[in-house]
Image 1 (tube, rainbow, N blue to C red):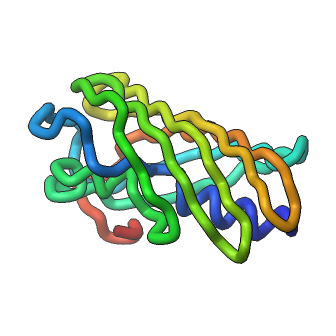
Image 2: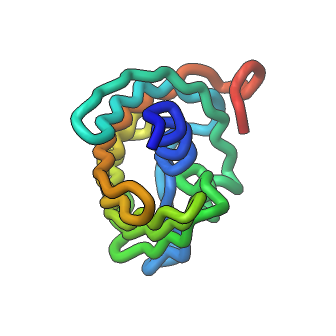
Length: 145
């Protein structure tokens, strides 16, 4: 497994959760541009990346803000206004990745996401990640959505 491929996958995974267990519980984050520092460790090798994302009201209501990888199925196990937890299972290029995700919301302008996955298939391994996100702009101009 190439480290870059794993990091690209992890970047797509980072903000994921789906099918919320407690729909209707509002996630109180500001809309607009968000800056994220992501630390990823794949089989003992660590890399730090910076991401820019756009958060809309619709993204928060549907949890799309935390759901970026179409190759994965996400299941919420818990959702409150300040914390979201879930599990994920992905199949990419013959490899299966299963793991957990924990999002902690520290106010309207910051959240932290942590998690890990076991990889099985052609090459076994493990991925751990930590994302620290801060609100940066009321506008999404220059930010991915």
